[in-house]
Length: 111
Image 1 (tube, rainbow, N blue to C red):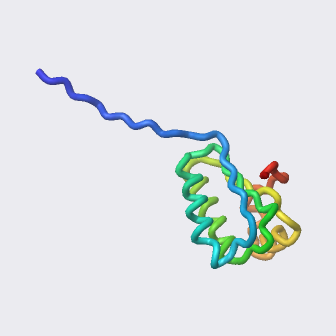
Image 2 (image 1 turned 180 degrees about the vertical axis):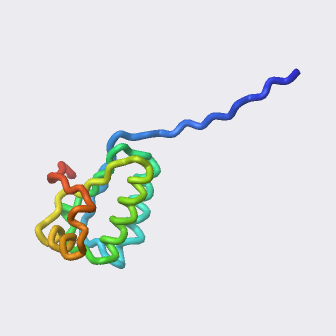
Image 3 (image 1 turned 90 degrees about the horizontal axis):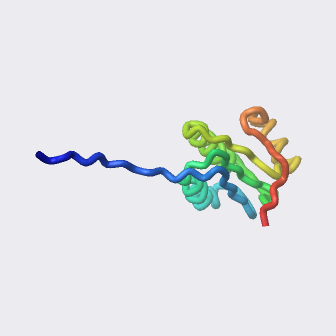
């Protein structure tokens, strides 16, 4: 008589992951930032923070990326928070009707 073995998988879950955006978040940089944010989601964080303190320019492609990652985080049961939003970032989000979609937190201690 043979005993059947049950296969199990373990998922690593990190409580908090923070991604700091430096420079521009636009059509040219979105593919690289998408990879970084997908890597962050792979860790299955409880909270995903995206720090925009050092993001000097944000265009529609960048916002679409943030919306997509926000949706993916929500589907995983994680909170998605934008930190360090400048008045320009906030105005852009408001113009696009997204000021109530994203949680916007305080500036983080990103080095």
